[in-house]
Image (cartoon, rainbow, N blue to C red; front, side, top):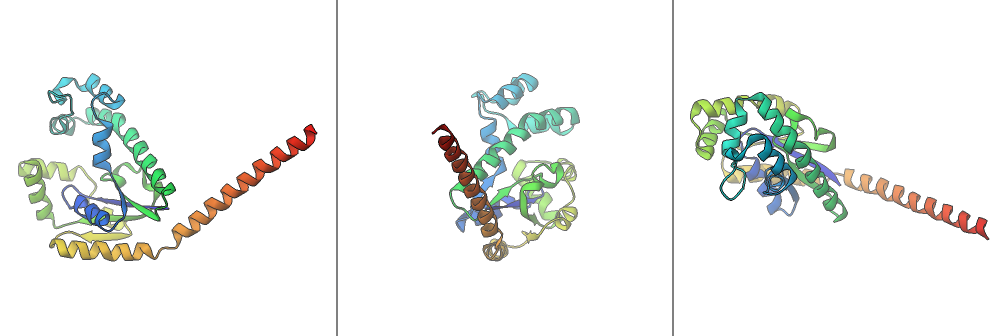
Length: 232
């Protein structure tokens, strides 16, 4: 199995593209969904978060107020680093465990949505192909303001904190332009799916895996048989 990384900018349409992959029967891993599980009340990450940031970042039911948390860490690099230290390793570990589960379930490939794929660089090694979702600058700004109820000034600051889309595009294998309508985005995504389905990498990798696994089994069997023979 190989992993396809899906990334892009804030509000460019990553979730929309991920949903199209899911509609086509492709196994997907959503970093945002994983992050929510990692920070569920009572988890180790949640306890560390509460200890460092206090109850200010929690709702009454104990769930993390992600909007308030974002406001706190956005203009404070030290607190942002602390948040990343608490969450990123656990999110990445959970995502890789899910990937292994999909591997043993027989999937040829999976799509892993990682918003800060290029910014952190932590998951790049595992990606066989990378897709970047883009849209027009004014659309990104409008969508982010509408989605998160940001002012234009705040939205621009959030966007500028990430790597420019042009740089992400230059490092990617595929680009999906989500500036048009849903049908156009679906057409682009499904065109990529057809390319990925033709990839021979998955069969090459599985062959190496099973050859290695069988070699290990034969090696263990040989050691056991020699041990039994020596005992006799």
